Amino acid sequence: MTITTITHSIPGSSGYLDMYPERKVSVFRNPYIVGLTAVASIGGLLFGYDTGVISGALLYIKDDFEAVRDSNFLQETIVSMALAGAIVGAAAGGWINDAYGRKKATVIADVIFTLGAIVMAAAPDPYVLILGRLFVGLGVGIASVTAPVYIAELSPSEIRGALVSTNVLMITGGQFVSYLINLAFTQVPGTWRWMLGVSGVPAIVQFFLMLLLPESPRWLFIKNREEEAITVLAKIYDFARLEDEVNLLTTQSERDHQRSDNIRYRDVFKSKEIRLALLAGAGLQAFQQFTGINTVMYYSPTIVQMAGFHSNELALLLSLIVAAMNAAGTVLGIYLIDHAGRRKLALFSLGGVIASLIILALSFLNQSSGSGMYGWLAVIGLALYIGFFSPGMGTVPWTVNSEVYPEEYRGTCGGMSATVNWVSNLIVAQSFLSVAAAVGTGPTFLIIAIIAVLAFVFVLVYVPETKGLTFDEVELLWKQRAWGNNPEYAQNLLQNANHS
Image (cartoon, rainbow, N blue to C red; front, side):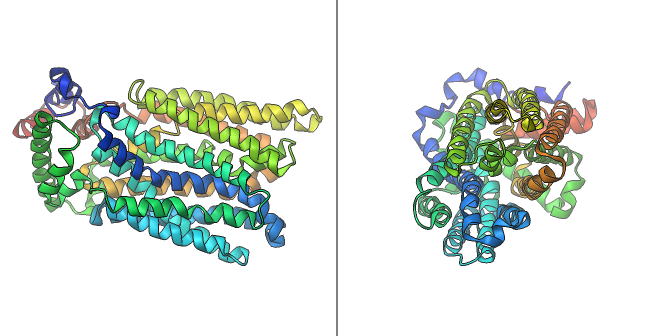
């Protein structure tokens, strides 16, 4: 007997949907869930816009502040202070999500982000600018935890991957919009102030729209607010499936309350299943950053200039093309993640990333030859990198982290994994220019390529396939990985499932 044999009747499982195909939910036939996803994904837009806008704004900040122009450390700090704030925001965001709900966490993130945008736009010197970046980072950190979890908990299992990946699309779309904004303000007085200040607009829009949206039904069940949860679920499922989903959530809620009474938060990570889930989730988040994505996005205009294109406007235009490919690749990822699956998509993505990084490394290693061909080859390498990265390693880590943790600890565990992402992000952003200056840009990209090889092996060994699985099936999957096909343990799980 294997654990997977007990999941065929769970609402949303592949076995359940095979028995009742008419109960399957389609994205485009349910405008309600599309609207919820779109509004929640504005958090991703904030994330992406902030990631992209600073790369262009930095070119003009250096023109206004001589201290910044003369110091790689100040340049890296302006970029990295948002990441430092995001680390704190992500760590606190997990607790805020579990204690106060996904909706309130989103609203708090919007308020903090807007405050940061105002401070940045009005900054009289680099140090006030750095303070504004800190506030923006706090907001982005909370949003990076909240949006994927909120969307995942509202999503039917059969389309969960695509809907959570929509948040990643908004991240890449935000990066693309940031480059458009950068280009639009290149000839406007106070260039970089406008670039940074307008980032508060989507936060204000999301703040007011979130006031109209419901809380996550799964969080409501955990907090014994069943009637509110059922009202939300009734707008997502037909009556027959609604009844099954409510029965399942009721049973889960009772079980989770009993488990929560027996397990304290400080003891939860003694669970082998949760440790395995955190290893997979946090590992993916770390490798997403260490394989170089934000090296490319933060410093793409600078990389383009290093490749021999010295005009600020041309550097921004080429970076805009890279950002457009990033968004287009994410659209492809939205389709593939629920068809090819998370694991296969990540492996394919990493294979292409390794090849692209080698092209980038060779381009910069031969830059001294004076041939303009290598400058263009570097730009092609950047574009290929984005083309391979965005459908897989761009979407998979956030999707996997929204679905692999137990319900009552999903915010906390998701916050921990997001914190790993931001810490890794900070290390890369704070060190890239310095490492490139010390060993050269070509060798730096070779180092990243080696890390991508390690990421490929990690996915092969530690990341299971979760395509189409319900949250209950994912939890059982980790139990199976933790304890194997132990007949006595499987029998206990079978009995628990039958009681539910």
